[in-house]
Length: 330
Image (tube, rainbow, N blue to C red; front, top):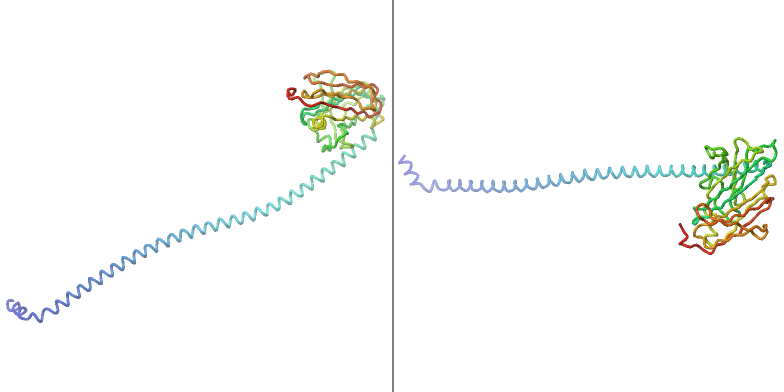
């Protein structure tokens, strides 16, 4: 052993180079390992970043795919809606055509009914015909009540029905039929209530000369004993000229049928509370009849004209007011 150590110590030139070479190899391996670790670490970071980006892109792709699907569904729904809209438009056009045809058929039916009623009218006697015009402060308050006490002229010809025309004749109107009026009622006053009244059946008979017709049916028929019946309706705007221009004209036509006889014709005009100094008179061609003035049950000033044996003449009244007083409105 001592000899070996002495031999190595004695031969340093032979041992040194291998050791240096070995050390250099170790250092080189360490450097290579460090570079490999660093490179691998960077690659892992890059791979993780790419994986995260890829995951984000996949998520965005799923969102975009979902949005595209929703957009496609919306497009399909829009197409369906457009198709449905076209179908509805076609159906609406057909419905409008059907309604127009129905209205035309109804108008023709009412005109034919009027013609038949007028041609087959039986003689009628009104012991009393009382027309009450209630003039509203606004168009919606224009009401009319027509009050009849009616009997047959001949015992052998009882009255199964009676045709009347209602409304004014001096102004245009959009009302085409009695069915277009508001708050209509036709009823008979029962002499021995209860009930005090019972409804009468009626049919509209269209329009002629700004007046609308109504065919009233009596059950049982009216004979030689007079019976009282009434019809009421609201004709919005009937008295607009009086409200707008403070002057209006009303006509009552009695010459439309020679088979209708009236013993007494009474016409009343009920003025609104706010009317200032209301005045009404018969036209120049009418009889010299002055109105009777009084207040109705609600306190409104009412002018009433009574004409006995009015014949088959046409009568007109001229109405005037000086304005409307706010203090008079209730």
